[in-house]
Amino acid sequence: MWNIIQSLWSSLALFLSALFFHGMILRSIRENKPKWFINNHQHHIIRYFIGMYYGVLGLYFIWRGLPGEDFGIYTDMLINIIILLNIFSGTGPATIATSMIIIGKLLLGHDPHMQLIYAFFLLSYHFICIQVNTLKISLVKKFILSKLSITPFMLYYLHFKMAIPLQVYTIPKWLLIFTISFVCSLLLYLAARFIDTSNKQIFELRQSSIHDPLTKLANYRHFDTCLRNEYKESIFKQTPLSVIIFDIDFFKSINDTYGHQTGNIILSHLSIALKKVLFHENALIARIGGEEFAVLLPDTSRDGATFYAEQLRKQIEKTDFPFKDEEIRLTVSVGAATMDHLHHFESGEALLKAADAALYTAKENGRNRVYTANLIVPLKE
Image 1 (cartoon, one colour):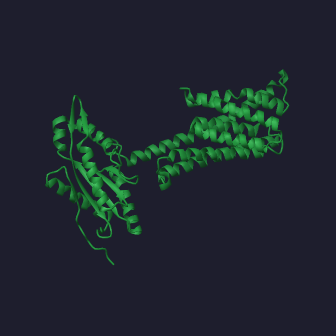
Image 2 (cartoon, helix red, strand yellow):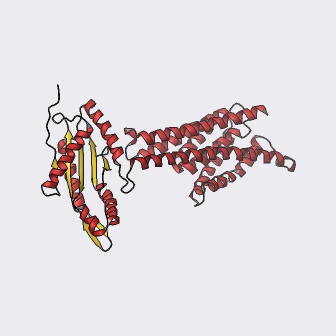
């Protein structure tokens, strides 16, 4: 009995540790966003990694169950992996983990016939969990339904593998086994739910702290932090750094004519139009004032910044901004500045001020145009 309790406790502790480690890694990746993470396949990469991560955990439980009777403990842990992955990570990671578990069971098991039956049940159960996960019910109901659907397999496994007869006098033993199994699974489900919910809440709070609530673009504080960091990296790597600033021409008259609520709607639609401009993947678009926006362009030359600025101006000019039964056309004035081997600035703030000065030059010369800062200060030897 002591061996059973010890195996159960160690398995639960390991599974819970794996869940919390998984949560911390995902939180770190979301917050730091390493460069390998910023690509079109980032979500698939993480999902595949999660599947393999829990597949390895499943292989460990298979290995632990090899020396002798596992009393269903390690098998139950494999079932929990399939349940939790289907509920919280989706079909892809669950399929990867299930495949690794089945292959491991077939390769490491001693009885080929029994292992084939075992693999068939696991695969069938995985497909059952997939179907349960498509139901429009709460997560806890999905968990309970998934857990109950494994009952036939557990009856078969415990009866033939552990020689527990299906008799009236064994009902208390069956009830005890299923109660322990359900409580352990529930504990793991609650831990996974807590980690998933807390990670999402932390991510949403962080996103709200760095994004403008109206346009969903980066806010000034986040833009300023990124500008300082990119300035230091540009100095260190001797790579160009460009900044674009623009604002909407005659936006005050739009607010006066149509009202501030309409102005907010236009700003919201403007952010959508900005996303159609094909900036490179490291660009950061931010709302830094009322109708003033900025674009941070790391590793972008003066010509590149001018090109992006002109593309931006043209995109806004040709966009129709719907308002009730009419459409409003807008134009923007754009200023750009670049730090490179010919143009040096003492700080990121100085670079931003140079772009801002170019913006006002564009306004003074008729608006709806792009001006680039021409401040040239030789780099110090």
